[in-house]
Length: 310
Image (tube, rainbow, N blue to C red; front, side, top):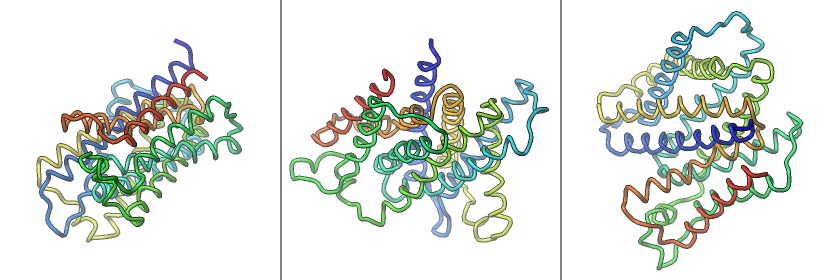
């Protein structure tokens, strides 16, 4: 397997893990029982980050990874990336899932490859080929098509379209902010890996920075500590499972960035709207009935194919 193929495969694996994470969070938010003064989204963010930190440091201890050559300067980009994603990103994204569902939230956030590519070309000096550019537009366009509002009478029985018709402009603020943070984190990670090419250490530092950020928040705010408390075992298990999925996602896309460019890895690791939609229809035991959803899926698949072959 060539370096490009390995990078693409790892990016696609990251997409699968990210899609499963979104569904696990949605399940916990929908099926858990929370007091009115609690914040399920904040709870999901903290639990999933804590699980990710535990997974990564356990792996580092198990592998006896050397940290002698690590310096503050080398690790700083990963820490900053962790503050953007998963700390701020995860909270905004989970709030969006709680408000408008996993499918639409994932679709909006999936536009981040375009922003990441626009940053990577001038900041990192990466190039965007014609084929990659078309593939990128297909992926972003397909994701965008999934969150176009409105529905025709013939589409009202489609589970995705039912969610789209209930949206308003304010519902998109949280996923749009999450999208920008995620795009910036790709560039920060790539900058860091150019000087310190150890993805496992990098992921551990990023996740730990996010957990420290939450710790500072709770130390400074008693109400925040109160809002994050959870007693429902169903939600807790779902959020912990989401943390395991996001840990796998992070390790996969950090490693993918070690071998590939942001322009290539960002789109392929952001195919999770397609993953979420596929699982959603499978769980509901129905096939897409909306022409719009079918076209969107086709665009995303075509874009992913172009990103791999060009």
